[in-house]
Amino acid sequence: MSKVARGVLIITAIAVVLIVSLSAISARSGKIGPEDVRNENISATILDLSKLRTLIYDETTTFALPNRPMAEKVLREGMNPGLGIRQIHKQGITGKGVNVAIIDQNLAQDFAHPEYAGKILRYADMGIRQLSPSRGSFHGPAVTSLLVGTQIGTAPDARVFYASTNVDVSDPKSIDAKHYADALEWIIAQNRLLPAGQKIRVVSVSAAPSGAGSPFTKNQAMWDVAVSHARQEGILVLDCTEQNGITLRMLYDYDNPDDAAKITPIGASPNRIFAPVNRTIAKEYENGKFSYIYSGKGGLSWTIPYVAGVLAMGWQLRPDLTGDQMVELLLESAFEKDGNKIINPAEFIKRVQSPSAATVKAYRWNSKAIPDVPAGKAVSPDSTPIPDTGTRPEVEQDNMPGSSGVTLTMIPPRTTPTPTAPPRSTPGVGEGKRIEDKTDLPFVDDPVVVGQWTSVDYVPDPGVFKPETRSWNGDLFLKGLTFQAGGSTDTVWKWTKGVVIDEHSKTASKYEIRIIGDKQYMFLEWKSGDYTIRHMKPKYYVLMRQPLAQK
Image (spheres, rainbow, N blue to C red):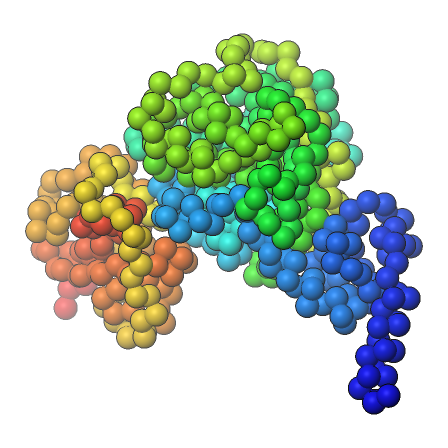
C-alpha cells in the first residue's frame, strides 16, 4: 500500500471515530437540539453536513480542519433568502424607493455593516438600557439584515427608520410595553414628516408586546393603541401577536432553497404564512467589527423581517395598495402544503402586478377592525431566543420578545440619502433591464468640492434653477452632503472629480458647481429607480455652500 493510500485510510478511520451525536459536541453547554457553538472549540469533532447545518456558529467557532470549508459553504449558502427571491431581485424588484421601519435591539451606530450600510435613514434610541453608541446587539443586526441586507435581505434596496429598544426579559424595569408603544409612536411621527410617495409602509417588530403570551407585565394596551394609530396612518405593523402577526416558521431545503415543495413547516396553521428561519444573519457587536452568524433554526423573529421585505418588493411595484391588500395577496398567492401556506414570492409579485389587485379587500385572517384597546392573544414568539454569547462590554444577554425605552432619546441621525427622488414620478416607457453605471472610477482630486453642502432645491434641469424661487415645494429628503478630502463623504457614497459614486446602487451621478451671485451651487444628478429601472432622465438636487470669502 502506498504512503498516500495509507494516509487516506488513517484519516478516514479517524473521521469515522470522531463523528458523534450533536448532543455531545459541547459538554460545557449541555444544550440539546440546534446547538449554539459560538465561542466553542469543537475541533475534536468531525461533523457530517446534516449535523453542521443544525448548528448556530460564527467566526468564533473553531471547527475541525475537514469541517472548515464545509462551515464556510453553509454560512455562505445561508445568505440566500431562497424561494426564488434572488431571481426576483435580478428583475430590478428589490424594494427600491420603499421606506420601512424596525423596532428592535440596538445597532452599533456606525451603521457600517456591509449588509445595511447606507440604509438606515433615521435612528432613535428609546432610552431603556442605553448602551454605548459604539456597541451593537445580537438581535438588531440580524433582523435588519434579513429585511434589507445586501446579500441576505428580501428587500435589499428598501430604507429603514429604526427605533432601538434594549429590552431584557430578566429585568422587570424593562418589561413594560410602553417602551414599544413609544417606539411606534416615534415612527408614526417620522412618517408624518415624509412627503407623499415616501411614507413608511410596514413596521417589523419581532416581539409580542401584548396578549396572553406576552412577557410584558405592564401597559400592554398602550401597544394596541399605538398599533391602531399606525393603521390610521396607513402603516402596517407585523409583530408576534395574534392580531398583528401573520407568520410561522419553516425550514427551506438546504440543497433546494428555491423549491417550496421541499420545505419543512414548524407547526401548522391554515391562516398564517410560513417563512424560512435556517438563515445566515449579520453580526456587529462593536463599531467596525462585523461578520456573520449561521443560525440553523431561528425563531419566529426571523420570519417577520423576511415577510416585511417581500411586502416592500410589492410596494415598489404598486404603491397604491394598502397593507391589508398586500397581506391578502400574500395569503392568496401562497404555496399550499399539508394545509399550510408557504410564502411564494414570485406568485405574490405576479398578483401584485395584476390590475385586479386593487379590488382586494381585507385580511381573511383578521377581518375584524382593531379596536382602540383589543384584548389580543399573543402567538408565542421565539421559544428560546438565542443568547448573545459574544464578549462585549456594556451589553447583557439579548432576550428579545418585546419592548423599547421610557424616554425618547434621539440619536442625531446619520442622514444617509435614500435613492428615492422627492417627487414620485410616474412609470416611464423605457422600463427594462436595470441600468448599472460604471462605478470603479479612479480617484481624481477636486479641491473645490471639499466641504459641506446643504440642499436647497430639486429641479428637472439646472437651467431652470432660480435662487430666489424654490422649484420643489415638498420636503427635501437629501438634506445635504459633506465631501471629504480623499474621495469619501459623510455617507457611504464616494466621489471623484465630477462624479458621486454609489457602489451599492451601481450609480455614478455627475455633479457640476456654478457660482451664482456670491454663492456656490452644486447640481447633483439624482439617480433613483426612475433612472435605474424606468430609464428616465435623472433630475437634480441643488446644494449650496456658504458665500465665497471676499478677496
